[in-house]
Image (cartoon, rainbow, N blue to C red; front, side, top):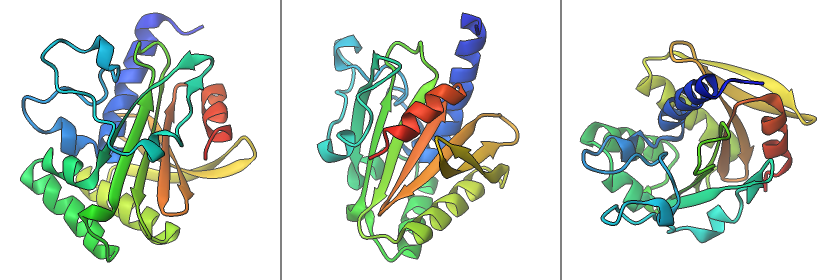
Length: 205
């Protein structure tokens, strides 16, 4: 059984990678805003905290309600909200990625789920560009993340739950994100162990 301290280290490492890979650096990089991967529970937030956004409920509905019996918490963003939260350089990078896909900010939506207690090393997100072709979306998204990380992400694939999924691993910080294209969306999963990853993949919608 993993020691709590080690589990915490692995989860924090995974969250840092997720900030890069999902693109949530656009939110976290804005000074004065709460960490988007801190507690997602509005009830657990300080009295003056920014309200947890639930702008895209249909995307949240595609995320698993629970993992290992633990209820997850959610947040979701329209492209405009997400873009507004970023630095000018990150805004430019995201706009360029969308331009390369012949789409705009209004086509972008995102949703995120994790365990608000932090006891399970698990994060899942959906990055959707309405109308984008799956192959083109994944290619453009990975290319943008490689550029953001100075090309330190290592790409590969793995079979989980009988499904072949792509994965990207940060060669410096460690941690792996599993990438599963679904229509005009990318499902992005970080899991602390194989069983958690398999449960998450089995619940993809």
